[in-house]
Image 1 (tube, rainbow, N blue to C red):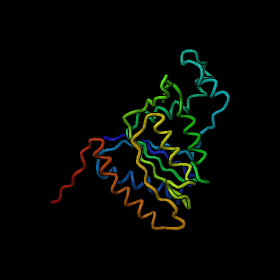
Image 2: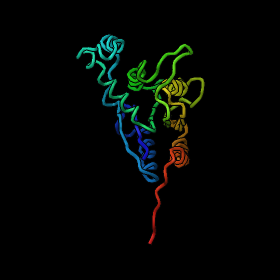
Image 3: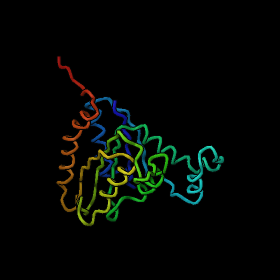
Image 4: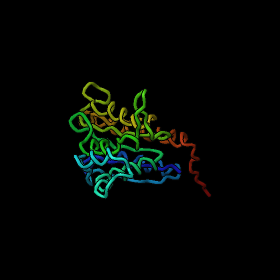
Length: 210
């Protein structure tokens, strides 16, 4: 079984291209193998870190007060979801050339020293190793990998920072200018899913005809 954590960050709960591509990916995975799906929809809200959160984070666990623990509770939940997952499915719309504010809030909440990374004399080391990620990059006019794409490189770096270095991107970019990019992204998902199933050492479902 592949444990999938799906992260949606589109502000649109209907008519969203990134959500539609994530639905297609989940359906394709379920058609081929057993999965356990956990969904985190950031349209439901993600708090911005504040002074209370920063103070609580800096205090050792055993020394935290009840107020400190409450300040970190949402962050702890998000980190627990990451730890439990084998595959991160990130549905990522591009807002103003970069990630949505809700997804940036998620990043700030999950990037915690001693929890998802640690500092060493040779630099930071990610602690969430052994996982893979699939990022569905969706934009109206920003070309994936272009000089005005301030999202894909950042997301790849952040995932690597916390230990997730096996990252695939599927781009449905510039779809307002070229609607065919949506079909191309769907084809890329259909081609990639069998490779993901194989990478996790999962047996594909078989169908029997009578």
